[in-house]
Amino acid sequence: IKEGLEKKTQELKEMAAQDALSGSSNSEMNTDISQYTNLKPNISAENNTNSSDESEFKSISQYYTIQVGSHQEEADAVNHVLQLKNKGYKSYYYIKNVNGSLWYRISIGKYETSEEAHNYRKNLILENKFQDSFVAHIK
Image 1 (cartoon, rainbow, N blue to C red):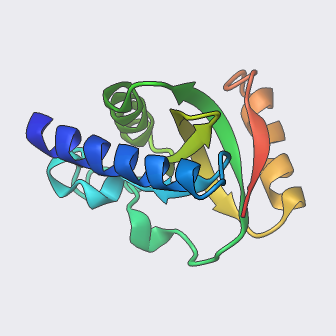
Image 2: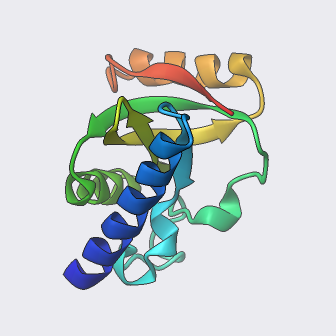
């Protein structure tokens, strides 16, 4: 697992460096935890009907999501996503290059409209969950 994380982190840093050289300092790179097949939680569908993987997400190029966290270390992001997945949330992380630093942003869900995302966020807040979350538009 550690070798896979180190390799992926290095690849992403190289991509971010290329973006920085090309002048796009705020580029976003979508990265779903499901690409790390050896890091997926060991949950069978019959034991957890809320388990998710990339195939459950709609394939859309622009979407809204609920951001619930952000980490500077990929390992922390992976652990956060796995904790959320174990609780039944359709969670993933994406990478944001902010002024030359990579941030691993933790999100729940992908929604086609802002209204859908805001409605789901309101429900989470009513359940006293993710009080500091916000809706982000991913382009």
